[in-house]
Image (cartoon, rainbow over all chains, first blue to last red):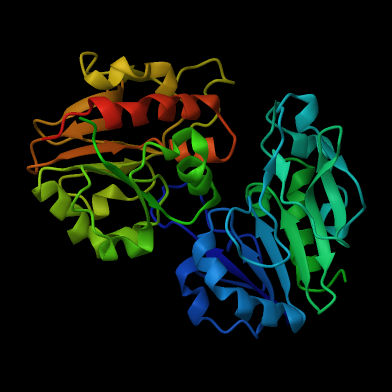
Length: 201
Length: 204
């Protein structure tokens, strides 16, 4: 059975970064700084948290690219700030973060967001803006999945690399923050796992 | 005479925005990648800022280097979610459930300025420090709580008694939220706190 690898950032940050391990099967979790010592070959998916030390991850570009070439699926959360992978471009923030500009729109149907009401991503307890405030610009050939604001700025996209492997990009907080959510957003975590581990491919 | 400030960068996107972008870049005489702290010369630095949410696993092995700054009469700022109790002396911390939603529920966060005469409050007001906190400190005898929860613990205190230096210890995590383009109070906090550290803060 394919497995996913999660990175655990910032120990001792209080209870606001609960572990995902209680919500997912077929997954392991390691300290983020243990990644360079970890054999990625048993893993079908690598799940990167928004609190990632991007300078550290950027030292592993070659290993991660080789693992992607062999068919891995990389899920990235957060804003791209440091050089990491050639497919990544620095985050571009929305210039105006008005209510209209923070609406989340579906651009392309995708199994990860199947059955998820975009209103449940735009609003959290009636407040807009938690989901995304800009995008990590997609490479040519990527498929935009969700967009923010009237211009549908592609905050979520997926890219099938010509060399092999897939990159799933979300320019916001960890998607697994929606684990066990009371809205349709709760569908994201199991659907993301199924997709990343190949069941929906 | 201004203080020379070094800030730790833990490689996160929000530290990148908070430290390297133009808005605050001029306040930092040095930016040090947190895992490389001990290799860095801090002899000419007056104030070290341990940026919020730097992994304590990175800081604990470098605790001696941080504490030696205090021994030299320098200032260490420990921001929120850095596990300061693991690498600074006399820090007592209690994790608490975080109320992110007090402002939607018609309540308050219960914060108050507890040392109104402190020079910090020439630079920020209580509203600039009000978003949420992830726990509280019990400052040691002789330390001064700057901002606290009425009848409870402190979320920002100054300790000039435990070491020859000065510790500014806070539960607040402004760089994370400013760096996420989120919560304008966190930007206002940095707009005031960094000039305070640079121009007004009195070294021990």
